[in-house]
Length: 344
Image (cartoon, rainbow, N blue to C red):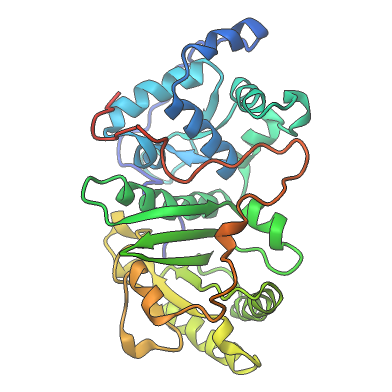
């Protein structure tokens, strides 16, 4: 059974890095950063704030070509107090560095949005607290599913594009009184779009609780008049089969089951470095299993929207925000940033 997301562990001799000298954040330092931070730096910083923590591997997928060039820049952002980092304990080998927002980075984002840095709710201790969270592996895995999609979209021959990526906190802010998805995404490919909520299961959640979520998603679909698929990722095909039985039974008790399209997948269907790759032909629809396992872009063909006149959830990205909340980042790198030409 998989208990940690891919790229969470790297084989090698356990070593301990020496402390690195860091700059004290001050007004003068903020002025200095104004001429040293690139658009990519600012976008990565905002992505890390929005999604709380990203590993080195995920950051490479977002905006770099090589790990070496990313490490060089990330070390500078760490020294400049734009980002902070930690390295979780691994059972064997070494874990990659995990990055969170630091005080200088929070101030930069606040000033970009015309906000008072003292009023945006940023606390360095809370940002670093994710290092001790029992949900760290879960959060990193969810984020890894989306960074892999962005990695695919950055390729020169890409046919798809991630047009929305909401964090767990953003979903909770909009729908938390009904349901709390692990994330929301929208993928455009071949002239069609598919939007979805993701539920990531490490095999520890009771099946009854997963079944209850179906009822909550049904209620959300009826209240918003938007039919949104739910993609459920779990650890093994054996666990997947049990989940499908529980969810099939839950759908029988709904008055409009078509409002809750569900597809499932399992980590052991793919190679270890592709466990979280949503673009593979791995998604098995719950009510149309005869179609076989499909790619993410193909799901839009079997789930035509029931409410064609209704806007999708992704169109709510510009809903009025709470006061002093930082603006969410765009899911794709800044325009003009060609990943094949910016290795440094």
